Image 1: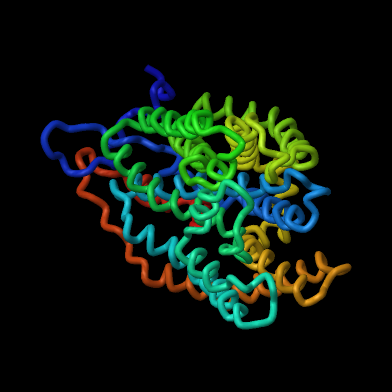
Image 2 (image 1 turned 90 degrees about the horizontal axis):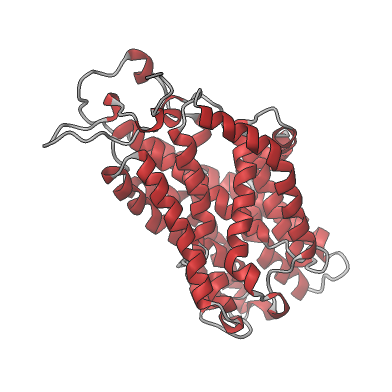
Length: 418
């Protein structure tokens, strides 16, 4: 048998835990363990484009009626990055530290959100119309419940979540982060890597079937905001992460993925651009069965093609453009703050009488606040996260012992946490 045959499910002795009862091969993820690739700047650049789509959409839905798919793109990126992190940890240690994972997620996402919530709550006492429900909006956003409240409103959204209604997407993401890691850990402990991949694929299809079951125009808000009805977009990224982790650098399947992603990234980008330009997603006139059932998964799969190309084709035009330093830096460091701040600032400046220059004024203020948030809140929390993190002890290894070459390979920088 050649060295390439059945590589993806071949047992890796160095990754086994202590033998208890009959030996069972641990899932084998060769590219996660041995990859030395740098962080993929193109993925950070894609974040920049995604957040700018959402911002422009909130100001000019007539220009970019489908600009809300920036959120969908973010979902697939998040599912991909987080799953790669979790698999890398499992490959190194034979386990996933869920408490540490949740702590890192909290430090990464919540402090900056709480600052926005605090300012929103304070503005409740100011004479600005959009913030009259600031306290309720702040409490719901801080608890990651805005999406749940909006999902329960079949008609027009009430003001109870304004001006933090945009944090519905953060609620979906946080709820995914809460549930997916223990599910993935359970799969990794019990199944081969191939079975984990198949199981994740099946889970990705379930929300589509669920949306078909729920579909009617009055259920549009339920489908759009529900963590269960949007999970396929995050899981599509997770499936890609599992697939790439299974394939070693010389795998013929990896080469096929590289070839096809090189052929399909431009058509995929064109279809996404067409959706942004021509296909309204939100609003009663945009509620149609195709978009709200299979459409969300289609957007996720198109994003998966882009992510695959960015991962496997570092010299492709897409990667070179998205890896430009300003795009990559903004996506890596400011995209979260830009998303957090643009919506309340838009409402605040509008209430203060800014009209003709509302978009450029809000964009400038958003960049200022996002930069301040990054340096004063997010970066200090990130340093705290890394400073207090203790290295996990690797489980005792079954024979043969790990070789020096494989033992010295660090976790890839590309898996660095958002």
